[in-house]
Length: 284
Ligand SMILES: [Zn+2]
Ligand SMILES: [Zn+2]
Image 1 (cartoon, rainbow, N blue to C red):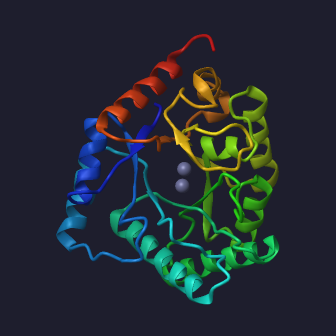
Image 2 (spheres, rainbow, N blue to C red):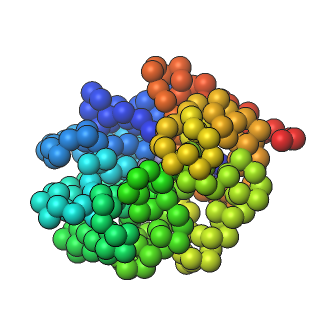
């Protein structure tokens, strides 16, 4: 059975994200466990956590993905930012354990003017330390990024270097974001582009696998290096591109999560039904 979900909000309480996903007809979901643009680490009560865990069980929402804060930059040149990032990553790993979530999605880091090699070493060292602090092992998914200035994870061989240095106890797999891949020059709207992504993953990352796909269309053209998400079918990947992508054999069994723009719940409903229709399309 295809696992299809949406990134849902925890506004109003952690459990509300599960209710929202269930109301949308999803069988998996992704959440932030706190505001992604704040260093604050909220303290959740035991009751709130228990409520979340038991509701998730009763709604059969699985797997559960948590996306890391956007502020985390493990390869920052500032020792202070690096320490804060490791602390926040450790907090997110602890939350993952408390919520009984499956995977934590991480953008490994930004070089901010440093040589790439140095930034990659710092990112993997930071990942390793957060995992050692928490003993939550093999739960981090490294997400490919769009290739914005300073990105250290827009190319699959670079993600492999980070995973290698961090070690198998730290990294559990890869998350591929369609919009980021497209903006970084992987043309996922074509069969050859999809093959390239999966063969590079096999070549450089094996035995790690893609455990999650973020479905987003791209507001910007191929290789733009700018991270701008669009509704499915309305961007440069387009309806035909998504039809080909969603029906490629490489995707079999990998959970799909939408991170498309959202002004109201109607946007999620529309994007979900678009994906379902394309998954059933006979001819792309
Ligand atoms: Zn992300
Ligand atoms: Zn993403």
